[in-house]
Picture 1 (cartoon, rainbow, N blue to C red):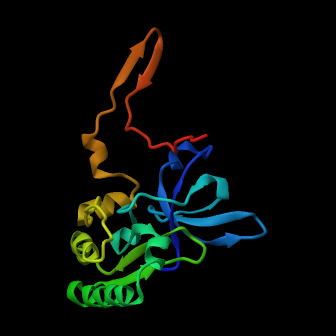
Picture 2 (cartoon, rainbow, N blue to C red):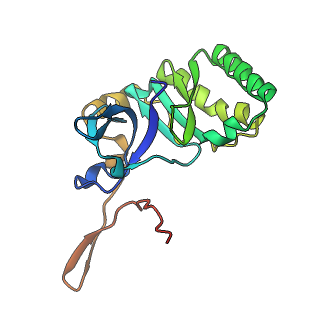
Length: 197
């Protein structure tokens, strides 16, 4: 899964896909679209205009039931501006992190992409534990990211996810509001790109 860039979908007619995260598997020249593997495992062909390539540092993209986790770290320019000895120390710490947490840990810098990430691969519990420890390891190299936003799925969550249900859906109540004959549902706030002119 390393070598694939993390993206967020936006501006699609299939609105249920907007805001979802995934990784770009490759570009199909004939179709003029990117093949994107979404967190739910689906593969979609997406136009370049519908991909947000710059994600917040610390954005987690969980794949394969929690066995693979892409964690956005920051801009490639930050990594490229590091002194060689600082880069070497980062690579050594990543190798040590891999052995300590018993998960495969890779620095992911796709060619031509503006950001880099760390990809954690292993059993879901090990990946979740490694994600908890990742910010502390990176902080020593002036790469600050927030703590994890995902947790390892338990067996019930994994089963429900494979059936297309989330365990939080039961707890989450959608409130319906009627204003002057217009009926609206309260929903989560969606992030929208700012329009700077």
